[in-house]
Image (tube, rainbow, N blue to C red; front, side, top):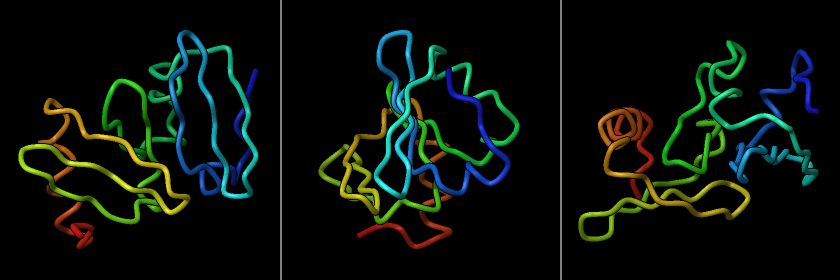
Length: 105
């Protein structure tokens, strides 16, 4: 079971849902697995600024490299090269933040 340390949220690139587990991906390349769902982690106060972009990913906005619009869909590329799509339902919260930080590429 993963318990967040004090400065650890700054070291998390993303959290990824894997059935009833959550995989943590860190900036140093390490991964950790939690026995809790992604929704459980999303509600933690220390992860408040993270972005839920679809069912599978909770992203640290600090590590978003760019957002790419392709036709009517949006892809997010993270600093570690990971790519994921933004769900239509989550676009309303993602687009304003992306424009604010000039993340469109």
